[in-house]
Length: 305
Image 1 (tube, rainbow, N blue to C red):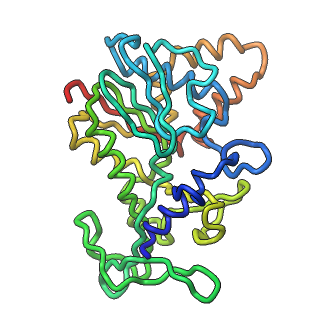
Image 2: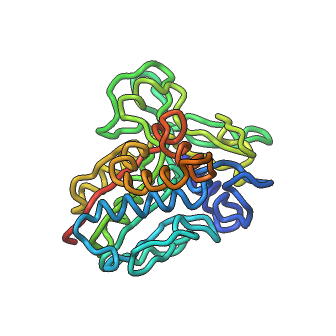
């Protein structure tokens, strides 16, 4: 099967898919596999609320429904966070988006958790990689058909791996075609297209199990969380095709400093006398050595559907 089909089964199969299993995945507790920005507690949600409110400009937040797509069961970015929106709801894995009216559409590490195609440059062409059984184990194979996409470079070093987040692009298109207006905000990891095609010869997909990163994407299918480290650029291209105007792609630290400065200043002033959990969380989310540089945000406005 293609690598994309294997990832679809490993991640989202209703019975064995990693994101369909009833188990903890995110956090510090026993059995968890990785951290996200939401692991820092309510501070991340407060930053998102402050930034979204600023990005709405003159719009009254009470006129908008805040819709989070893809949150883990029992959690959400607005959990234990006061917000000014008229309503809020969460779309879990497998549920319809049902987006309509005025919305703030938000996701956190949704796009990097989508199936992807995997290609390798061999014999002057991009070849599709797939997955097959080799004895009692899964292994990668080279499929007979070449990958022909206009976005691909015509030349690359022999054996260069490229992970193509086309499902993430399709997901962005699906969100964009629903009948809603308002604000789109997606938080995820990212690299530039140039980095992807010139500086990542081993591909960008990784898997996480018990907070340990591995490049073996075929180990423990359904029990590890594969992620792509570069997805938002292609997602942004797709959203711009559906009247989501001025898609802006920024590192998270820069976006929060620009659009949530009031909340950051108030928190720093309130906690000035001691080193609190909130200040530590802010440092983790804003500092370039932590999530501030690696974590990125794509946002765009839609005024007319």
